[in-house]
Length: 422
Image 1 (cartoon, rainbow, N blue to C red):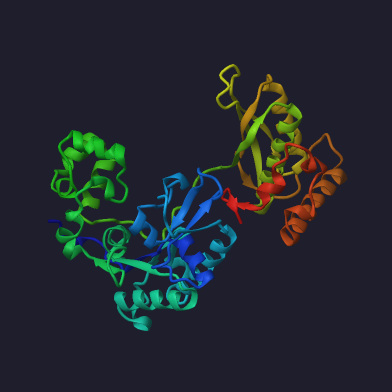
Image 2 (cartoon, helix red, strand yellow):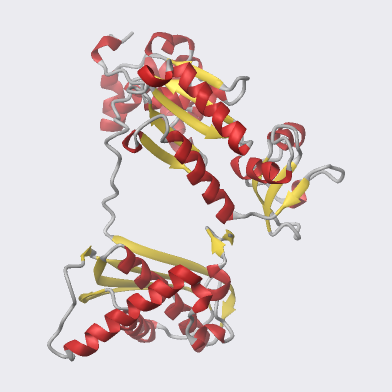
């Protein structure tokens, strides 16, 4: 076994809101989220309706979970089906994060997903007690305030906290579990299925099986040299993870290096008219340019992809174009339309993707030799005014006439978050 005194020891909590969307809906209706049979379903009026969240009682009684379809429901059931309210879930997530900030500094919180967060409570013990006491206080406060049940994994690092949550805390009351360096043999090594381990997917599991590794115990007791031979640097990481070691520091949050913004839209039907395709394209570019201005970025490259779906007679295409740096709505719209018309050869369109790349911070007004500076300034001011009105009064408060024509999707999509009703 490794000498764990050589590795840093933190106090990490991994907190999960149980069946978050379903729990929020239960709380809103006055139901107990652990006993009520309820699912949040997109397109719940159709047999293909998709389950976005199922309450614990539904999972236990019917085996229905996130990703199940309505046609998989038993003929007789007592499940209440409700539509998603993504805006409400985001609001509740922010409120729960506000509770976290009462116990740790904002720099000691890492939001892993809308229903799961890591907290480093290493510096909170003097004020709030032991790891267990802090976990219990946070649990109780979230329950008393919002009636949302939570599970808490506690670990000496982020990996152990996550494993404690996923393999222990979620299943046994009071839904708190602590996995430490000292009990790796009784906890981490007891995870039989490789794909149940954080960071190991089905493909990696098959590769590990191929060299005779079938459990986390096997992985932890395979020589690091052998793992590095087959998997390179990842092999070394697998070895240490299987032994409960993770050197990640929560405060050193990953900053994505992606230098682009993108939007992708699957159209509600095949669009056969070029005019209708262009309406949607312009709406998407409008949204993308708004995101650029909010992030105070300009783009030096645009990309467009168009797919005809299953129509094999027509060639899908994807092209990009270097441009003078800009964030202006009208300029970007004109450029994307030119790119589309250059390569579009007809045929039904089902998927449109737009992206802007080579981003850089906006330094000032973007002048060029071929336009009147006053005209450029007026356009920039107009863009900011449109953005401000929409921020304050909603997207529909100020729309282009094209968005009232057949084929437009902008108004309907403005009512969605993550593809579901806000």
